[in-house]
Length: 263
Image: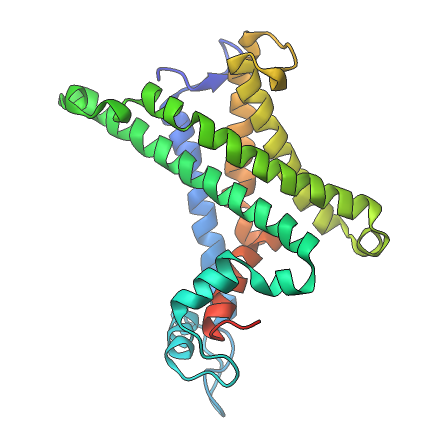
């Protein structure tokens, strides 16, 4: 892990530098979420009361709403999380095709994110364990090379699931007249960004493993292609979320929990 990736010998990034970049992306994400929480908490919390500017106003109101008896739906938090947030049944009732697109993108994205975090955790544990002398006592599956191989098959599966959703989204935006006419630049940026991240991940892995997605490119291109994929993923999938339409991944589940779900 001396070098993570690089464009050339003169333009290499060390593992530590990439970790700094990751922390900066997380920092930007936290700042963006702080701004959103401030905005969401600007409303009045009761009849005749002044709007609140506290960052705690929204979490307090959310907790209050979740504990109160809802006017329309009153299902449990578990049911809301499973049926409305994870399974997305409200979209399914409106359009099975749209549901399948959303569901594959959601499942693929979240699964790949979780596996990336697990891989990062294993690498950090092993890297810290080497100077401290406990790395040799870790279980075999905690060795980064072994753990990466364990994740290889599920990574392929969920990558293709995500790719399926992206292809459907592109087709709908290009060939469904109603959606094509309603598409604005904001929508296009999100879809293009998600497409670039997905395809660049396939290409980086294909070059490294010599499979079809490498398109016969020399293995020397694996580090820069991997670097490109990681950098754009950090910026687009973490730092950009609070400032983009993708904030609905956080806002909609919170709204569903506050309203006790619904069909």
